[in-house]
Length: 314
Ligand SMILES: Nc1ncnc2c1ncn2[C@@H]1O[C@H](COP(=O)(O)OP(=O)(O)OP(=O)(O)O)[C@@H](O)[C@H]1O
Image 1 (tube, rainbow, N blue to C red):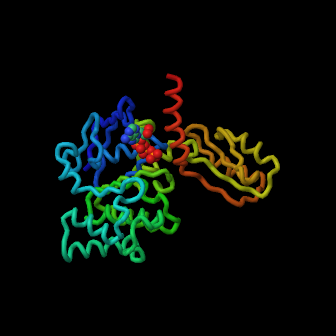
Image 2: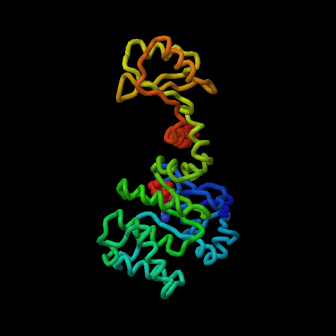
Image 3: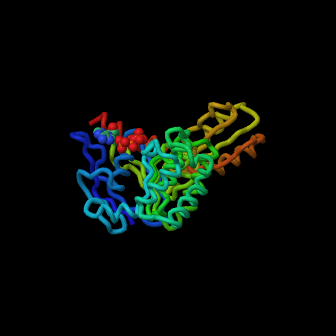
């Protein structure tokens, strides 16, 4: 388990991380979300032992990261932001170098390199210098070095940044398959990534933890939770009829089509049956009709904007 207690980090007088506490258990794939500059990378660097906390404590499977850094670091694979260091090495030299640092040699070292080369599809760049690789390949080499020692904890700072859609899909599958008994923490700006691979999400804003829950629990906090989206083949009076429904707080007309509407429910109200009845009564021809689970981007905006508004008022 990773246990983070009252963690803070100051850079001179600037407090980048403010009194954050949470725990992560094996099997959890935690999406770490927040706007630019929220403190995600700083927190990840402290968990990995690359930055010393100003206050608070972090333990990784009972090993204190500050007092017992070697034991903690052996359990962690870390993909930092950006490209791997040692850019003048070839992919193979770099993976061998990292493997040796991790204490592997001989046949085992070769087997581990072969496995990550296979998992990340690095065959075509194995003899090329890292500095000459595309952004996507640099990222994949970075992930390969992070998983080479099959760590119990994987900390990935924007793992799919710079990858094309196929590579993104491949890396997300890899993370999903890795994660059964591991702790995985992923920072990302891509909210669909959270729904795709994470079973828990934490949102931080201006260094503070502002939301923590399963993706579905966070989506349920959105005003679009149980909203109904409807597309019909006529635009006549549809907006007025929908707006007049009792359970509806607001109707949004799609920017793409004036015949597509999203009905946002009043708090705790159920919209679907009213819409369904209206469709029958009016004889509308329905092209699309579905109930939404909620939108993570809406919750993200809500909790992160609240933080900045509170600061403006103070
Ligand atoms: N070494 C440093 N010295 C001074 N300030 C720093 C340092 N590292 C980070 N910061 C500041 O701390 C804040 C948090 O930065 P951090 O990189 O952790 O944010 P982030 O959430 O990872 O952002 P992004 O999504 O843009 O990567 C930012 O305001 C950043 O400018």
